[in-house]
Image 1: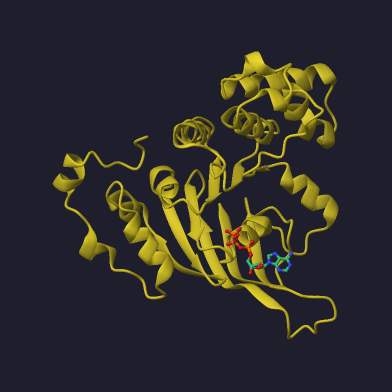
Image 2: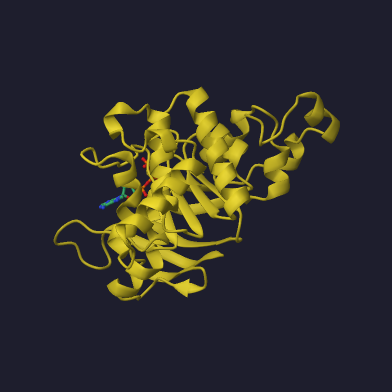
Length: 276
Ligand SMILES: Nc1ncnc2c1ncn2[C@@H]1O[C@H](COP(=O)(O)OP(=O)(O)OP(=O)(O)O)[C@@H](O)[C@H]1O
């Protein structure tokens, strides 16, 4: 379970007073249930990445509380934060692999940093997570020898190595072509369904959010202006990006029910958020 209560975050230029600065997040409250896939969408600058960074303690809120797995990250010491982060994996748009390490070397990095395991134990766990993402045959290669989709699979394997209960994804498919995107969405679903990992996905790709997520929160100017329930997300016809675009562009919540198609329309169109 992930909870944000009244979270605000300001960024300051050098020399600015506490009442100045730019408010990137403004009184954000949100609850994400355990085992859910939750999307965060919004225009550039809406505060999506800031919200994600608060969830692994990379940023501290100025006000409010951030709880992950019942632990309040706000006010935690660096040492406790490091421990808490072991149950929070993260992947990025540009994969962030270390170029001079092999695939298995990259995947084992979090285990090395955590300490307390032998090299043989780390390698065994690394091979296990590489198998999970379908890349055990690439263990000895270097990132430069892999495609974009393979690099993101390695990044997912690395994030899973320390058995996290939460996976944070910052624009995980924005660098990938549509076919590779579908493959990565399959892997993320597999992570969620097989391992029960709660996933939070920041994306500007409305269709990715619709296909992958149970719920979707829409952000605008540092606020969550709407959270779509599972029923509402399931009801979004495929593909109808205009509806989500209008959610991004207007403050007032769009009445989804006016635009919902009936259950039979939905079936006829073959629309299902887990279609790829
Ligand atoms: N370290 C920082 N210092 C100052 N301002 C920042 C900093 N990080 C983010 N901001 C500002 O806060 C606002 C929210 O940024 P954030 O990166 O969270 O938005 P975003 O929705 O993820 O945008 P994008 O989709 O472009 O990545 C933006 O106006 C950004 O310029």
